[in-house]
Length: 179
Image (cartoon, rainbow, N blue to C red; front, side, top):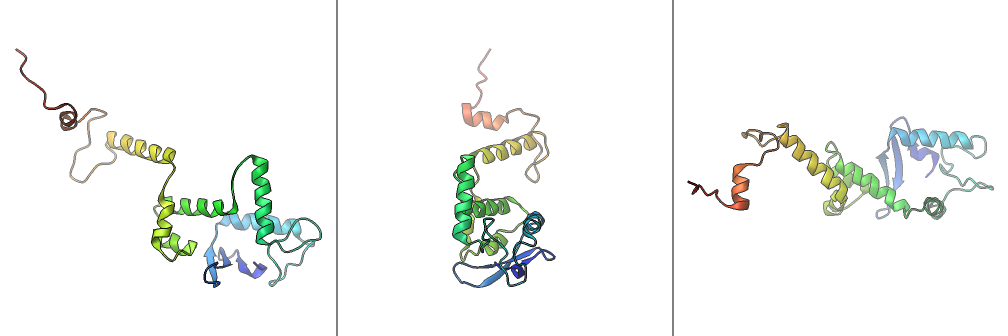
């Protein structure tokens, strides 16, 4: 990336797509540009900062353009230091997962950001970890029990009581043959 590929005013970065090799602008978070600005302030006066100059530099002297392989090695070293098993690609997966979990972001928009030709590829990111699924479903049950969420035209269940029809399915019809 060159300096002209980052547009903080529009919150856009330009990337070259791996498959098509086309240049595409993508939205980035405001925090990303805050961190970029802090990085640029750290290197101010040490590296050229013209529009055609590299955006990312190695921090070791002599300063050189930061290549993908150098970034990969840097990230691997940081991961090893933390005792983690993360890769640069895991950051892409995390961003995709977070976008797919946001109900305000259509899946087709996530597909476009990721550059997937097929929506089915993007749908792979819809799978949540078991702990999140459990928490989500338990929250759903709590909302149902509190009467805050229900199917149209149905009354909320009374507290945490079992519905009689559910008990009948589980245990059969109650026997009323007691004298």
